[in-house]
Amino acid sequence: MEILKVSSKSNPSKVAGAIANIYREEGNVELQTIGAGSLNQAIKAIAIARGFLAPSGKNLVVIPAFNDIMINGEQKTAIKLMIETK
Image (cartoon, rainbow, N blue to C red; front, side):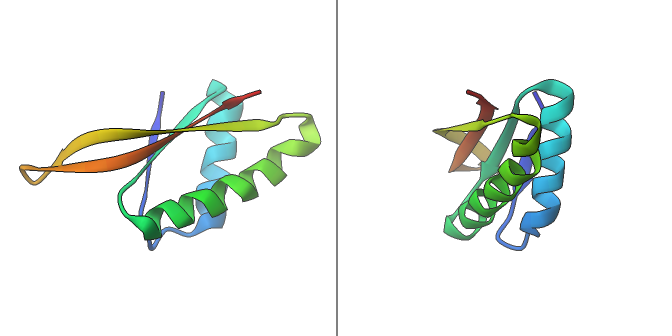
């Protein structure tokens, strides 16, 4: 499964396009965010992607979870958003 890393500076429309493309190819996508700003952009992107995929009868389901990751030798808690079909 491909992991898209979303930052607070990510463009939601571009992330949405990536979500839709990966979803069409693989059937699921995972987003990784650290911090409130990046989570906000990720949620916007998911809403936009849902609009891209809805005309083809696809309804996205988002499953949130915590994930501990290492960045520059420091442990951080990320939020991962697993996107699947209902």
